Length: 145
Ligand SMILES: [Zn+2]
Image (cartoon, rainbow, N blue to C red; front, side, top):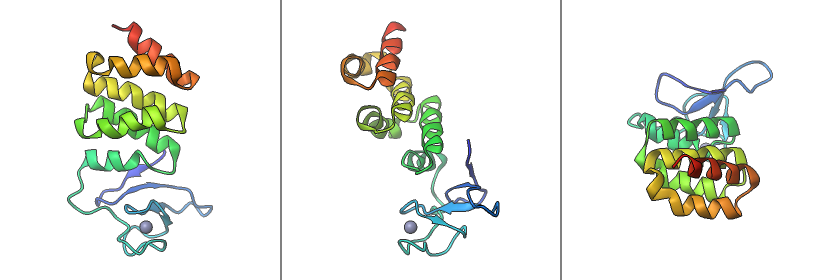
């Protein structure tokens, strides 16, 4: 990952600043902040995630992260962890997403979570209609039957 979860329960960070300092993404609106916690300079909400936020919840949050590699990695990890709570959002990303790389990873994760029989109709549809990368992924997953 290009980002890492910091130790104190707040959001994902990445070293995007020219001075090498960390950038913190607001848990509420994804705006970048130079501080780890406190009020977001964009939306005024608390920057860090609530303390009780679980790892899977943070991964689901990361699906909409503006750094696409973080979103794509989160999609892959959610599949590996077979996180049921992420299945609906992953389905959306696989079918409606504007990023075909993210969509392809999301599709693989949906299949990992729900199984081939549950996702067969989705795969058949995407094999016909999706962007080429997603189509190829659907084809491959159907071939694994
Ligand atoms: Zn914010």
